[in-house]
Image (cartoon, rainbow, N blue to C red; front, side, top):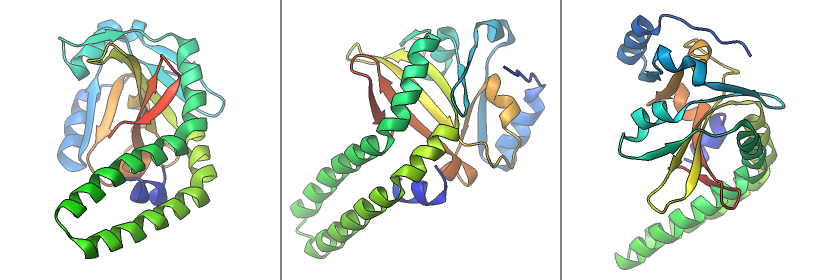
Length: 213
């Protein structure tokens, strides 16, 4: 969640007039916020985790994010609390599995192109990333524990019910985005977002956490 992790592993509700703020952010900082319609504010659920808090957005708002033709559902707080717990426990494993998938695809392409120097360099990179993951895993889990989460529920093409968890570390908040956390889906393209925001997926069927690329 902090600098090294993102480089390597590539109920207080504050309502504010965010229209002007959004335009200011989008123009100047690469900040993108999707504000939920005020008619849906009462349907937002807020949950307190052990060291952070979560905002669970309703299915009607979810469809504005993923598409009106997609299936969405309203997650209950018990499921979200379970997901947050598993997120912390499985965080490093999820990244390790994701890295393995990327490694296999990359090596296959390099072998097909007979780029043996790149293969040697990439294998060294893989070993270094494994050492870093082992060294910093506990720190990253603590970062996740202290980060706030925004959650939506949807159904994928395979019929799986999933929670999309956006992890936002507000311990440093240079753009004062925390007030918008409660009523807007927060995203951004560079800078602060590369080290303080991450997306993960919770699979309800088997309580599994995966990386959302």
